[in-house]
Image 1 (tube, rainbow, N blue to C red):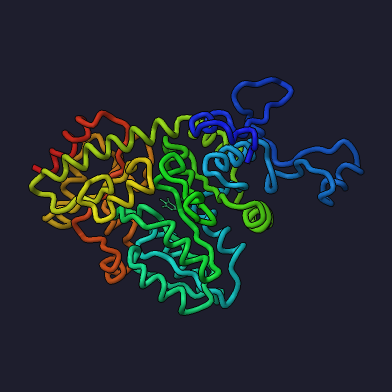
Image 2 (image 1 turned 180 degrees about the vertical axis):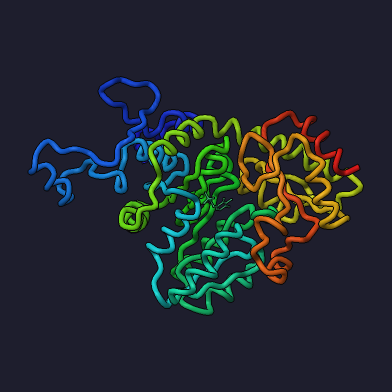
Length: 394
Ligand SMILES: *Cc1c(COP(=O)(O)O)cnc(C)c1O
């Protein structure tokens, strides 16, 4: 992290941390669209390759625009090191590939992002890594699973997708550390604007930058944040070897996204709270899942652990799948798309899209009912969103 930025507030870091200005004096960050970098001499090339002289060699290893994004995000999460990746999934893959070996065990929360669950259960297990899934908020089950093998990593999201369960980061970090394991937090839903897992004891943060860090639905990307040894050496070592690195253009888009992150996350949270309250009053809605509601089972924990409640709201319709599809098809404004964390509000039916590949049994265990809808509340006027949903509820 840029030591110079320690003294500045979050909003200031989000705008100014990590900038490396070239001798052209550009004010906005430059996009270094280059695959390789030239050396002044054969001796300099040899010194760079030998690691005796710092500097760029090839953009699979380092790129100045990507580095600006990495430094800025590290400054926001409060981590010593950050490496950017081509997607959120490749950030999770990089952590697993860098830190796990045959015979190790991973304990993960049930109800993780669907593709993360598939990566762990269908691919990691092929290489002799045991994976156990536990009910996200059952801490006795976490302890039991941790003790059942040589656990190296705990992997969680909080709040979870799509049911917005809130997990106690400090408690899970303590369980992990007591067993010599590390806690990995996917901080996609809150972003560092609302939640800093490293300060609560987590060891590693993974991000899908595709979501709120961009915030405007333009680019795929991801990142891993943590300590200098684990992230700066081990995870970076996998990335430079295997190649799922972030493109400089996407890094530039994310740099611009970070500049407005605080403002956007505050507005997403306000809009989501208003919609959640309104949904609770609608007769066809049997349940609303939003950590900001006082009757949410982990409301107090969310209030202590997060500085606001985020932009994701899910709700269940008493009429099941038919009612859910009818509501989706009645919208004219809200986009029917699986992306989230966009200025544009989006709606999905998890049971038949994001979580459709899970079997019916796994889906039921994860609490994904047929009447469940997930809203990513955007920045349009709340009254317009309410009118759009009301049409399908009538
Ligand atoms: C989208 C998402 C991912 C995967 O990110 P990609 O950028 O799509 O690869 C991982 N975790 C969560 C919580 C997500 O929402």
